Length: 468
Image: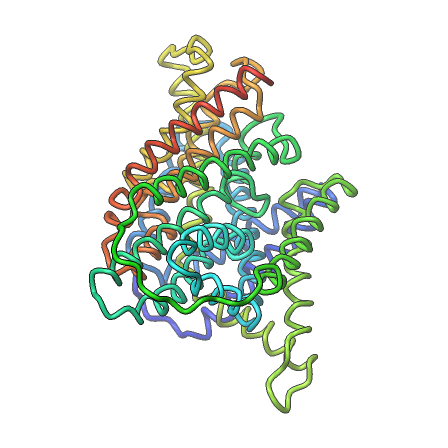
């Protein structure tokens, strides 16, 4: 839908997602549904405006959502409430994306963070994969898939210095794979990730405090499997002299580690002290940290710190957020369609006489690990897949599945989809920076990895099912 409308309209519309953040934070802390309704209305308005500046694939999601609303209105009595709940789910995801975009914007302009990435990309060949997969994991906790853009660009610059085209291509592939897998592992446990936020929203009785440690184990499984396969498959050739990186790890990574501690500890403490949901803690704390971080950065010559903060904030609202309008439309629609679609599918499943409680619980656990990456190959966003499929299931209590085990299985499948689906932002970014097709960067680079890591994650989820 490339209808030409004035750019100032998009610039003004960038204020809408920011307002959605404020309203959703108020809702999380007060429980007053009026704030959620207002946030939903503004989110729908933002999507309506941004839809005139996105590609056909994004517009298709909007048309599907409209069709679902009409279907619900014609066939059900509670369609209005269900639509409002779906809009609230979409507003929540929009608010989370906006908050995380704010801290990503602050990080990308911080010279010390960029230098951290260069330090990782400069490591010697024998250590480079480990450095980039661990670094990619740490960066992704803050930047999400923006870490692939940052580290991938720096890694490509480093590989470009290699004169041999075959070695350069192989080195680029290994570095991109390391960054990809480091990012995907965060989806297993990070309280800032969509995977955890959406999974906790659709699994009754689940909490991040209970899922965090098992999720960290899932992440370690993915990182270790990736390192093992890289060690097994990496090309071995004649040793060449390489400049040795002399910087100390702790010293070079200190800015990133300090930022991670502030964000993660702050979110955990806010969650525990105020008893607000993790998403509420993230949405309220992360933008504040981003604002303070910008205030601490050296302003341009002749500009005061306060003026720099005002200019950066205005630029963020009127320029940066509108640039991400495609992602905003997609993420809102994935949450909306998944929620409303589940509302429509549950009666259909019941009408067919399907008794999902008759399915052995361990099969549900295994299915959650594998069905999400499978649907990812069909073009289904994990937010959509999880929001659509999980509500169809009976509650974990009825199925006899511990909520933690179910969330671990869901986030494991989400992480595997993040390394293989050619339709996800992480794979498309890696493909672009690696100079290959998304299909090649997905299943081509990570097919064997997905089978091995998926098997290990399945066993871990089943172990939690029996132990909890």
